[in-house]
Length: 300
Ligand code: GDP
Image (cartoon, rainbow, N blue to C red):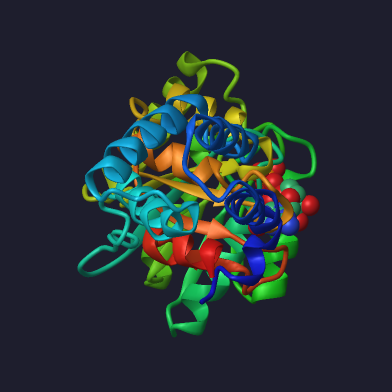
């Protein structure tokens, strides 16, 4: 299971504690539920999702007449998978023919550039031609950082100087992508998400420029979230995710956090699919998300 190594910290913080609770208390009683609730909240599953989960567990435990805590684990996994159900098997939406355009949005430091680099590598290794657009013209060093990834992966970066209009960069990038007949154009954007209006305005302008050139594009708008920020990632997803043209989520740094429970909260509380997860800093550390695999990896 691809998630197994990357989730070791969450497993320690969450599953090992559940196992300890089960062995120690043996019986499912009020005290058991209370402690389970604490563990889940500690793993950043989030209060709303935890309450829902505990309620559902109570119903299930009654229905199946479970008394032994040891028998709870499979029910817990089952319920967690149910909570996370949705269209997360969808994968990335690709153009049926011609150029696929994927936009990346998210606040600074969440791992946008790294994700673009990793995804460029993935597409390249599938034999696709890739071009990167340095649309974060705002943050110092953002363009150079994308170029470093471009060199590492062996793909070109379309850029203008720092401070220029990101929509102009996108225009250039789409032109270049057309001329070169590339398969995939991955576009970085500035992480100025302090308020929704800024994001919407900037994105709208970028959308218009891209759509004028390629009516079907962008094919995905991925909001990148840093899993190590736990509940903050959930708030960002709520704030920017559902109304700004975002089509999917990328959760980065799952390897570096004990707060992996945030994935469960995000899947349960939002209708947006988690398309990719970052499980390390290296090129290959990006995986398509699958909630069943995720839960099985946790409880493996
Ligand atoms: P950006 O500002 O959103 O473009 O963020 P960056 O791509 O520069 O990433 C910020 C930091 O997070 C860098 O040090 C990356 O190496 C690190 N990073 C990004 N993704 C992951 C991940 O999945 N796992 C780990 N451990 N680190 C990551």
